[in-house]
Every structure is written in structure tokens, then in C-alpha cells.
Image 1: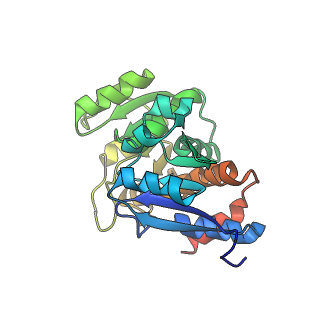
Image 2 (image 1 turned 90 degrees about the horizontal axis):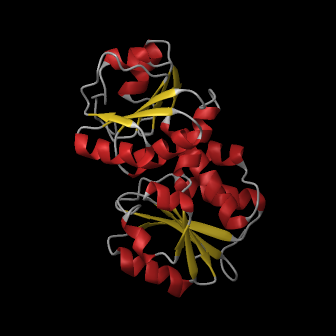
Image 3 (image 1 turned 30 degrees about the horizontal axis):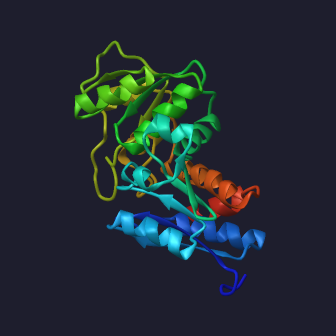
Amino acid sequence: MGEGKGTKLYGIIGHPVAHSLSPNMHNAAFKALGINAVYLAFDVVDLRGAIQGVRALGVKGLSVTVPHKEAVIEFIDVVDQHVRSIGALNTIVNNDGLLYGTNTDWLGAVRAIEEICPIAGKRALVVGAGGSAKAIVYGLTLKGATVHVANRTESRAKELADRFGATFSGLSLSEELSFDILINATTCGMGGDTTMPVSIEVVKKAEVVMDIVYAPLETPLLKTAKALKKTTIDGLKMLLYQAVGQFELWTGKKAPVEVMKNAIYGA
């Protein structure tokens, strides 16, 4: 549908953000459902100014990505229980000037995993302690998994683990530690990085291996896991399902999941 009179504006704020696949997904979804809206990527350094702009311009909704997921909370009028629990948000809804914040990252992670296996009763190892890791640990805990957090800086692993009743360690993992699901929630393996977040011995223990990195789609971790005949979940799955949650919040309509999926896997 043509842009112009009555076109609603949505977008993503982050720094950097030019690489984002979110415009592909949301614009394809708007087009598929005949919604007069456009979704743009905004590279934002001045976070306070950007949120003032949302109010002034009547931007209907925003996705929030790194490095703003935690800092943006102070500029939002109302945040839900998910944001309060996780300590990070990735979604803003503008309700006639009242900005409401929520988090669909945890939903994205949960839905990606539950496509493969039930979460309840499973043991999960989450590597990382940033905003994405917080959302993932929250989602796993909510769904009844037992979680261990491993991070290069052990104090950050402890802080995250304590928040959700998980166990924690540095990246040197005890041989006694056992788990069913391994999730990389760090940037390790992104771009041309050939390193893995954990050793091959750790990968061997898992049944399911998930990586939130999606550039490249097959990270060194997932390549290793596939060679070991593990079930793998690539980073686009979490990206897809967190966006589905956002789209449905913004529009009140059921998201065209296959359209959104094709828009990013074909990008």
C-alpha cells in the first residue's frame, strides 16, 4: 500500500542498526495484510532525543536493539512485568502519547526452542549475561527449565543467575555439569569470528544447540553441533518470533509468520 496520507510509522532503534533484518520482516508483513504502514531503521546515539521524537512525530511503535535495551527503560511511561523481571525491553507501543514497554525476546527464544522440544523439566546452559541472555534465562525459567549461566565475567553471571534462581560459573565449566540445551547468547561467532563460546567437549553434552547470532547463519558453534549430529536452532528463529510478538502487539492482527520468515531467510 502506498506511503503518504495516513501512513503509520514504525521502526527500530539501535547503534549500529544498518544491518538489521527487522525492516524486511515488518514491511513484508504490512504489505501482506494491506496495512498502510512503514518500518524504518534509525541509528540512534541520543536515546533521550529519539524517544522525544517518537512522542513528537507520533511513531506508533519501536523495536529496540543493542545497546539501548536497558537504558531506554527510564524514558518509557509504563513497563510490564516482563520488563521489570528481565531488566531490558525490546518493544515500545505508543498509545496516543503514552509509551508502553514490553519484551518479546523471551517469547522469541521460547517459541524457537519449543518448535524442537518442550522446555519444562529440561536443563539449559546459557552462555552470556547481556540483555538477550537475561530474556532467554527468564523465558526458560518461566517455562520450567533448570538453568546454568556461564559468562566470561563471573560476577555478571552471578548477578543474572541470582535474579532467576539459576546456577552460574565462568566459562570454565565443571565436568559434572550436565544439560540438554546449550544456548549461545553472546556475539561470539559473529561476522568473521571463528571462535566458539564453549569448547567442543561442552557441545558434545547437549542434545539441542541454539545460537542467537545470525550473521553468519551457520556459526562455528552450529557447524560443530551439526557435525556432532546435534539438533540446531539458528539465530533467525529467535529474531523471527520476537518480531511476530511485536507485530501482533502493534497491529492487533495475527502476524503472517511465513511471509516474515521468507523475508529474512531470503535476505
